[in-house]
Image 1 (cartoon, rainbow, N blue to C red):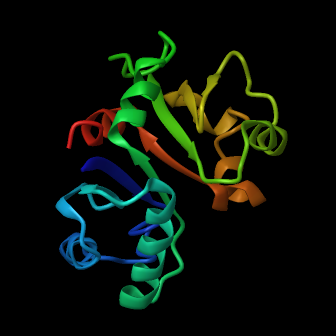
Image 2 (image 1 turned 180 degrees about the vertical axis):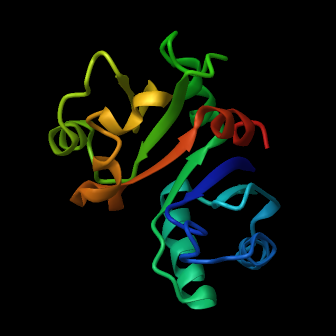
Image 3 (image 1 turned 60 degrees about the vertical axis):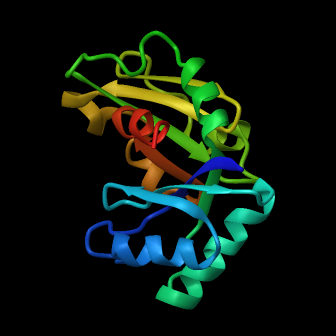
Length: 178
């Protein structure tokens, strides 16, 4: 039995793609997943399964389509892989500095860092930091000048937005231990 985290992209954002976490949890249980728990209202689900990781996202996407009638991309990662990613965070990421907003961008397959970088462009060095590791990118930026960063608006407005899901450092640290 292995512990996984499913990150659902774009649910319960600004009143769109609404899914109650209790119903989502029930859907995961109906798929046969065990020890299902959710965190926040933004599609963070931890669960246990004997199933192979590469089969899980598709089953969850189908369940969401059938049960809630939404086409939602799902990123699945083992908690072990998530810990490895967090353990490789650069020193500037995930600090207690309230002037900085720390995020982790997860790239849904088949998106590569090279394509992500090409679409979003070079980060503004004085305002934002990026560091790729495996299928994720550590991204931090100045909270007061976020609208001047190069990546902020582009993560939601370019063709790349459907291939990523973003979580804050605090959320990542919490779901890593669910």
